[in-house]
Structure formats: C-alpha cells, structure tokens
Image 1: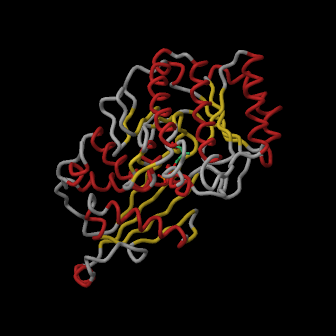
Image 2: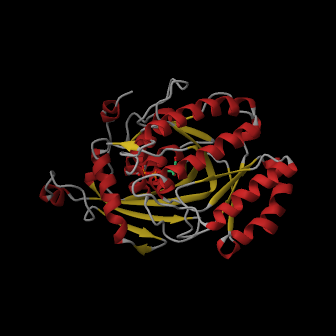
Image 3: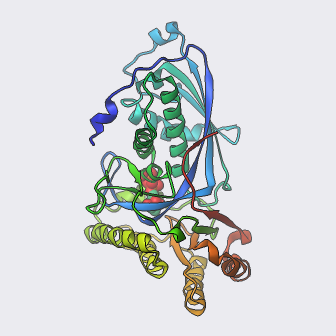
Length: 372
Ligand code: DP6
C-alpha cells in the first residue's frame, strides 16, 4: 500500500446546499509508544494502543458550498487557511486552533480535493475536562478525519467498504496527529511497519485482528489527573528531540521488540507480563525525555508516588494493575475489569490524594469513530 493509492479519487456528487455531519472519536492510550518520527508523519517504530471509550471528542462539521461565482474568484493555488474554515470549541470561537487545522487541511487536500469547494465550520467538544492533560489531538483529528470521510462516502457513487473507509480515515487522521491514526477503530490498533504484522503500514493504523484474549476486551483505564496544567514541552518538540538523541536507535529497536512480545501476551492473556512490558514502555518514553538535549522532565512528584504505590499494591495483592504514561504527568492505571471491586476502593482511598483536586476519570477499552 503506497500513498498514491489514497490519491485515487472516487466519483462524487457534491451537494448544492449546505449541511452538517456529527461524529465522535475516542482518545487512545499507547501500550507500546510512538516517539520519534520522520518527515511526513512517518513513525520511527511501530506502536499499539487501546482505544478508549469515555474520553472522546464530538465534532460537528458544517459545510456551505461556495457559489460558482465565489469559486471562480478563488485563487486555486492558494493554501487553505482560516478563510476556508472557522473553529469553535464548546461553542466559543477558537482562532488560535486555526494554524493547526490549516496545516491539516493543506496536508489532506491532495486526498480530498473537494474540501476547497466548501466553507467549513468545525464545532468540537471533549468529554474530558479542558487542560486535564489528556491529549485532545488524537481524538480531535480522528473525529475531523472521520467526519470528512463520512461526507465523502455519503456523496460517493461508489462508497468505500468499511475496511477501506477505516484505512483512509486513519491515513488522514495521521496527517493531523500521529497517534490519531490509532483512534479510528478498537479495541486495539497498531500503527507502523512491524515484521510480525504483515498488514502493518507506516501510513495508517490497523485493527489488531489476531486472537486477543478475553481479559483484554473490557480492560479498564482509570486516568489519574496528577497535573492539569498545560504541557511544558509539546509532543511535536519531543518528537523532534529524538532526531539527535544518543539512544534513539536503541529505543526504536526496543519498541519493535516490545511490540513483538506484547502480541504474544495479548493472545495468551498473561497479564503479569503485560504489566512488565507496558511499564517498561512508559518509563522508556520518559527516559527519552530525561536524556534528550535539552533534557526535560514531565513526571511530577505525585506521578512517582503513584508509580511506587502501584508496584507495592500489585505485589501485595497479586492484582495485575499497571501504570502507563503519555507525554505528561497523568497516570493511566490499566487493569482487568474483574478486579474493579479491589482496585477502585484503593484508587479512592490511596491514590486520589495524589491527583489535582482528587480528580480521576474512569474509562475502558472502546470501539473507535462513530457517526452520531
Ligand atoms: C507519548 O501523536 O501527539 O502519546 O504526531 O506530533 O501529533 P504528533 O504527536 P502525538 O504523539 C503522541 C505520543 C505519545 C505516545 C503515543 O501515543 O504513542
């Protein structure tokens, strides 16, 4: 599969009147992390994630066709910019989001050339609190790509079957944010070429269709909100720092190796080995940050306090609960649903005290983009 195949454009019957479409797309949590990329949003190693359920973005995409006259007056060689769209978050205009969306629109235009024929209104809201430190770019770009692809398929004379629809949606979402490529389907999605996954691609994520043990189908993710402030170093900057990183190649090899091992674990249901691999991945991600030039630290004292308590609780109770981290201070606690009666009181009594305002979000594995 090469980029060119996404350039094959369907025959469309574009509407002459305006309208809108609404979709939701969830966030995801990586088990093997994507950290480091090449030009064109190409990951340096394969990654795999649980698609989440309760943490999602809802996006309504409104479109108004440009009249023939105004279309004729438009200079077609111009880049798309905020004269082509408006962005609203929770009903409020957000012009500061425009540059990111403009970059996205320009990257996807070759694959959806009809976006030039409309004026767009993007209305978006997240179920998770603002500034909670939960990345909205994964769910946000998956929702936007999903909405555009829903429109394309509804106007197409030859709509894409679900598998190809998901592939192109993931391909487009990746051009907005790499991790967004993995939010299109669920419960598990991988992205990036890997020798053990013949269908894998650097261009889009795929649903893990090998045998997955029942224990992972309703896995829980309780997100402990340790620090709800703005990230001090953006993911974009973090990815860039992997270019001259002294341990980059070892890290990319480690991720490929961990993904291979995790595939076996996901099939056999060995939750203790799952904990080992997932925690190694989280700490390796942060080790990259701590050893880059310049170095930086996103974990907070409460992140470490929770990590220590997780390891003590797991040993003392033989409960396979483990932690993972994104590019931030919050801790994702992953555990099989059947242990909820043991894990939840412990979170409430022992861990919530390490969270900002005692806050945490209860989530679990989910299914991906949905049309509302
Ligand atoms: C730490 O997908 O946010 O969450 O492609 O630059 O938008 P861009 O980066 P982004 O990076 C996410 C990194 C991560 C790990 C992961 O989700 O795999």
